[in-house]
Amino acid sequence: MKKTVIYTALAPAAIGTYSQAIKVDNTVYLSGQIPLLADSMELISDQIQPQIEQVFKNLSAVANAAGGGLHDVVKLNIYLTDMGDFAVVNELMAHYFSAPYPARAAVGVAHLPKGSRVEMDAVMVLDAT
Image 1: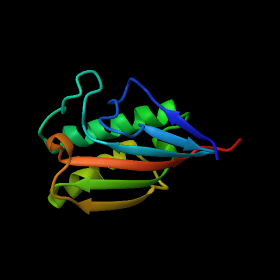
Image 2 (image 1 turned 120 degrees about the vertical axis):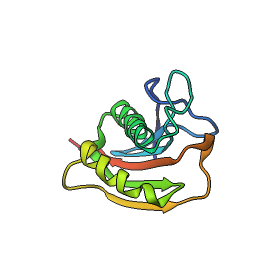
Image 3 (image 1 turned 30 degrees about the horizontal axis):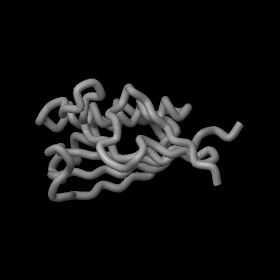
Image 4 (image 1 turned 45 degrees about the horizontal axis):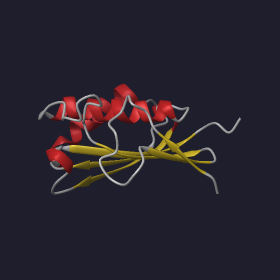
């Protein structure tokens, strides 16, 4: 098995001992993204809508660096510190994804890094041709 590290300066750098993404064959495992701005490594806002939008932008940047896009995501995991924000996630997902939508899980958590209100990770499958 050959693992390829995916990196882009257009998404936040890893904060710890992980890669932004790992590609194995035509599957890409995207690490969790929080709403950090890549240039400052600071949260975009304390409001949920801009946080969700930034997470999708960060995931998109990593997906693009791997040779795909959000349309190639087959599984999306969402972590929220307030499950009351789930309706906003659903609303914004419609701007970043189209049918058939990826499989998805949403989990309520007590805390996220840097005080973020949302984190998402994904699995993406690239066209094998």
